[in-house]
Length: 292
Image (cartoon, rainbow, N blue to C red; front, top):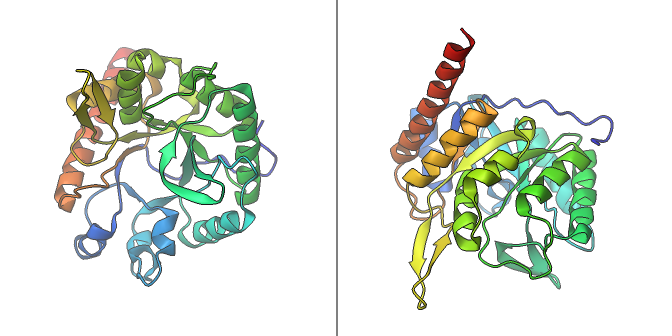
């Protein structure tokens, strides 16, 4: 259960937003695009020698509610408290409506690996993640969301399906779920899962945000293919179809367009957000019609 004195209220509108990237800082400040909200990474505010748009008095924060990521949940030897303190300072400064982190790991033996690596889906790993989610929420004084990662291999000793692992973390800690629909699509192809069944298995009341992004397909020498979550292209039609299923089941949920590689002009991200907004509006219209 969520520890006492933990705020569970989201200040993010249940509409489509975009990720704020360095390439777009000036364009956002100059044009003030008509988008409901934007996400920022905590590492954006830590970049040495860079002036971040959200830190300026007349910057993005004055108009848009932002999100911060960076709550490391995976370290088997315990969370690093000085990192949590830095994250808390960022949160106090930009006042994000939501904060989230992946269910994954990327540090071993003190070495940082620049990728989100899969966890063994075991009871032991589940206990570690839940303990760290509790610690993070207590330290930050707020509820966080945990996000399903994209993966390309799986541990042979994994005994808990990923969707059940995500559900269990939310149930045991009171955190929310960040449902990355693109990651579900990628993993379904890579591991032979049913993407629609994965979405249907998540507790809809726990889903506090949805992520959408593009992915690539790599042909392997044995004739099979591997889906790569590279965030370097438009959202695929397959992912849009899964997103419609998710919105129909969960209702209007804050939805983020992610784009990290081969970053296009700001207008392209806004077009993708408009597409997501249209799907949210259509689902809302259908629900109102059914209720009438």
